[in-house]
Length: 450
Ligand SMILES: Nc1nc2c(ncn2[C@@H]2O[C@H](COP(=O)(O)OP(=O)(O)OP(=O)(O)O)[C@@H](O)[C@H]2O)c(=O)[nH]1
Ligand SMILES: [Mg+2]
Image (cartoon, rainbow, N blue to C red; front, top):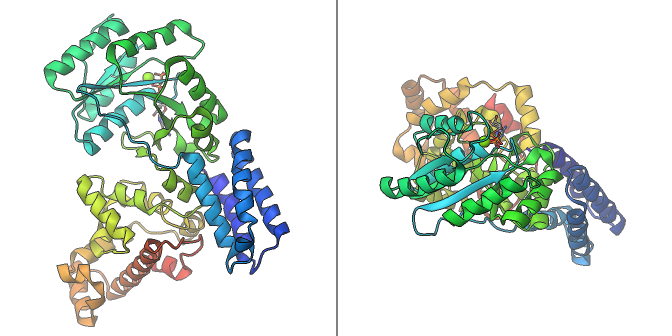
């Protein structure tokens, strides 16, 4: 995701960071390069201009240039501004109406509405613990209703039964009645793809909105279309008034222009991003985490959330808090190992860890063996509770015992313990607010993984 932009920014920053001191000229030329990188990433011109205007006086400030690590401080300034243009803070999904709460999903043809409606249903059931019913109002495209029904069925989500030839307004009314009868707390209405110039279809959305009074009208927009997605948001908003955005296909977008321009230009927040075709490939959009990823600094919090997907919300918060405080136990490590496969193997996990890009290249070279995951899991499972909480106590004799218990060679246990220590040191550093620059993951640690 956004690799092109990340790579370019990493190059610019490594030049700035490696210089022991910076002149105004060097900062100016760095800013020019950042401007170019953003433009090449298809960020709207207006947003790029504002971005540079906002960071320039800060970056050129004497206290920065004369500081001991001017490069690092400039990275921080850029990070803050990225967070700012991405929307500052996460905007929560509004489910605070009298149930059944209605959510309306709209967007252009093929933008990912139906898939996103199902993803959203699953997210609401899991994270908000509410009973959801999916409803398709797409009577125009053949088999569109069946597509949603199938997605619902395979994922155990309720779906309003299809009544042949019924029209959207009548389906809507039936959905409200059914929800009252079957106790659905949230109804997600998936609609047919339409263009903003298609007046009758836009009128239909307005009629449906009057009936259901949705707490959210969510536009689904395709990240790959860049500035078009942003304009679509603006136009949909002016005709049907949207409340938030799901940006899809972010997984395939190497540039990031839509994500970076959306809030600023359309005035509406991105609430979720689609990161793949699977039903679980929907992430809550957090500006800070995205800014971190764009700068190649990884995204520990998202990683934790994913790894804990099956655990309760409180547990996720607890682990998040622990990590923030720099507490990293063998149990949190084990949880990560177990989720690695679900998340697309090592590569998926690494892309969320600090220093992602350089790391990934090295990983490819190192040809990491998935067997390592299985062995490490066996090792951790052979530890006692005390050992897991405080691996420092694992002496030579304990290592032998673990080796016998897990059937894994002692040298591999040594490797795992070293690797664990490095990760926990890294977490401690991050928890103290230190940014982990890319390339910080030492070769030694990579060798551990081999
Ligand atoms: N890689 C990737 N593919 C996605 C994402 N979201 C949706 N898709 C794919 O995009 C295609 C179209 O998705 P749909 O959900 O059917 O799109 P739609 O907007 O409902 O389409 P219409 O109803 O025909 O207007 C499907 O193949 C999805 O799997 C995403 O976040 N990432
Ligand atoms: Mg559809």
